[in-house]
Image (cartoon, rainbow, N blue to C red; front, side, top):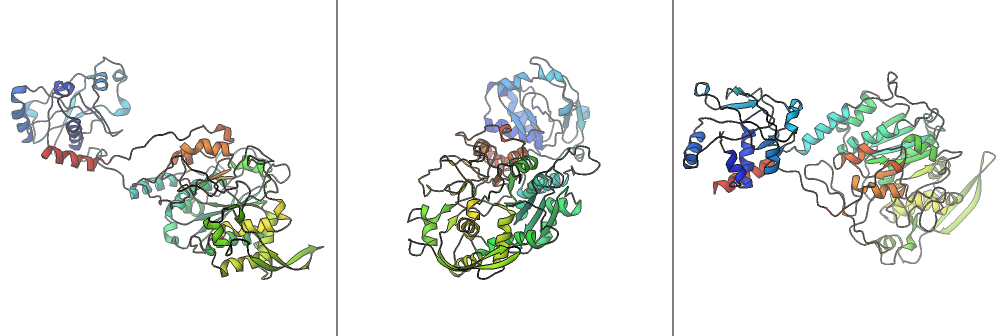
Amino acid sequence: MLPLSLTCSMIRSGRLSRSAVLLLSLMCYQMHFSCNYCVITENLEASDRRQKLSRNKAGAKATCHSSILVSAEDIEVVVDKEVISKYKRKPTSPPSDEDTVESWRLRLAMHRKNISPELENEGETVTTEPVVVNHFDLQQFPPRRIMHRKTSAEIAEEELQKSLNFGCPCDPSNNSHRPQREGTRFAYLVSVHNYRTAQDATYLYRAIRDTGHPGAAPIILIHIDKKFAWQEFQQTSLYHQTAVINCTCSSITHVASIYDSEWAQWSMNYPTHWAMRLLITDARFAGKWDVFINISGDSMPTLTQRALSDLFHPVHGPLRNINFVTSSACETGLVPTSVYDFPGFWHKRKHYMSNRRQGPTISYVDYIIDDGRTLVEGEKVKNITIYFGSQWMSLQQDFVEYVVKSLDRKDSFPSQLKKWLQDTGKLMTDETFIPTIVMNVYPYNQTVPKVYGNGSLVNLPSIHAVRFERMDEQSPSAFGFYPIKQRYEVSSSSIADHPKAWGPYFLGVYDLSDIKHSGALFVRKVSVFVDPNIVNMLPVESLDILPDIEWSHIKISEIPDWELELEKIRAEIGK
């Protein structure tokens, strides 16, 4: 431990380098001074400066007065002369020789929350008496925060503790529950595949578990990927909300871990098909919902469930009877993209069209329902067009029922399409299976969004995308779009997984302007481990409330690693 002394005049004269000032400031705090604002000063004569510093190294005395401000609360070192002069204080007297012990610790009796308002007035001085503390009496001092950068494990633990403290707004004792009215009945599938998405899904779950309308209790099916061990899931705040305190509000919540989904493979479809089957065939859910929405755990709705319920209302909602199967990253916006829309050299077209001229030919049998009877309409042979969309969709109940019942018959169009996709080893089928069905089967091809020339929805022109996400920005798009905006990178101290080169990329508050003007109802990916601000801002009653925050040409610094910086400074001084 190194007791240090330094004159105010030396600091103000600028003779010390910034590195030396920083080192002395950090060492002052390193010696366990518990004062919130610690100042190093002592009157030294220029002629014997080296001699006094040498005696200090031997452990004679150390004082903590006023000139350099080190804030333990803000982890802030202020070295600017003008700022220092604004907060100058009258130096306290050093301890007498009789009170000297092996090493002195002085504590200013002033906690940050109790700082005298006089400090805010320039030119005012505050005198405080030092408290002498025994060198070995360290347990009464706060831990040294200035020297330690949090690890990803510590950040994860802090977030877990914070999320575990969430209250339950639907508790009957809570009087904040608002009056309700009828609305859309949503059925959600929330997909979780690791610890991070489970923690983020807690915020999503809190946002969707109550529509605010009686008779419109949402159904929430949560699928935990088999790769994420159930024992680990039990350590998350999502498990705490759904199982421990059972804060389901008005929702019907069901959690299961069944499938191991492998990226780009057919297994990516399994959780969606599992949820659709439950909603149609399970008595707990059948007939109790209007719109099926599958969503990733690291997503958030932009609008409250009350506002969404009004938009999708089956009688008067502008989004009623529409099947949405795309996101903002899709080349043709709200309408699925035909494989023929891509240039001949584009990887998606080459992968799905072996001869590059036509899609697959599928033989299937159509069935019709007449007075409750299932009748065979006849066998058909059709050359179909493959369509690309998104694996995240908003589907009407009648279409979901058609898909589920058709997959029970091997000769149906969905079953034959599934067989072709599997037999030919096609990738990205979670983005093509449902969009191809809805675009090739009447009458469901009449339920896709109707759009204007600028891509906006005819029924609600403020909407250009139902889901906002950023993808495929690593190179120019198939349609000649050159992405130029910055995007969020994952910090080395974050537990968030790094996105693949093509995305989807994490979103934050700098994307709010684009989100707002897209009219999107959901956003992905967002995480409290990347930018918690956007997670805490959503959802809102109206997108007009969101601020127009957009990207500017700036570079954001990394979180300082003071332990590493101090080692560098010591090495530099020791040369």
